[in-house]
Length: 278
Image 1 (tube, rainbow, N blue to C red):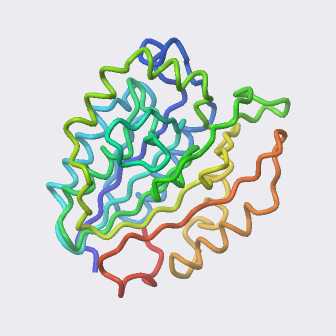
Image 2 (cartoon, rainbow, N blue to C red; image 1 turned 90 degrees about the horizontal axis):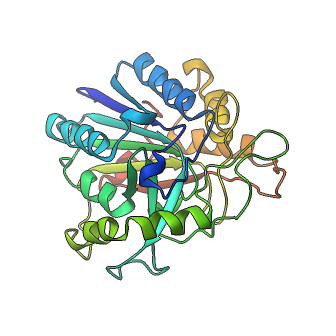
Image 3 (cartoon, rainbow, N blue to C red; image 1 turned 45 degrees about the vertical axis):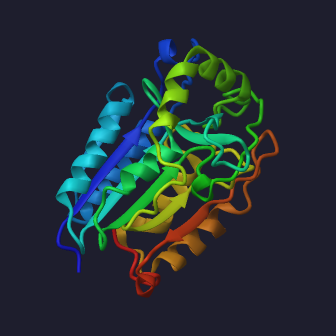
């Protein structure tokens, strides 16, 4: 039984060019996605917080996650969602087989996957974490590489992709190399394993891009259809299967197909088929 639930919803429609080698990374629907996730959380009785664009800094995001880790106790739920660009920086510690760390592109800098894992390690055993990420590279909880397509950010149909294209990724890293390399020096290698129970539902596989939209991202819009204003009934596996079917047949203007990813990292194996509740 959940004693309490907290949630944090991040939506970033543009990054600070000064922190990304003058790349602005403009998107359309990420703030709307964050608000939609917050409405779901509120409907389920969770206390929620929003961090939108300029508010979604590295310090703010990590501080909110740490505050939740301090507050939550076994049986509680933490719902974390992200909508924005996904990026990559070179792995300097040698813990990535592909030589790259995957990132969330927060407003004033990228948040490495290792940093997110370390933040999750602060949660107590018995706390359950649900992570939903509508971004490119979002399937990389399994720590695999994604080759980012070098395509225009907005296509002829007005739809762009939440992918930090290679030139921007390289320029960003070169402009801030000392900062990103320093992060890795204070992170343990190998990474510790979080004690909390973690489920993630993310927008695409490692070799695919996540589409933006005018109202919501492609992934989020389909997730909302499956959720159906809270009328969905079933467990996490059923929810994901319905989401996967809805997304399956779409091919975008650049030939990209987008397939969601469901990953379970749970010490509490008997909760694999718990009802889908957030």
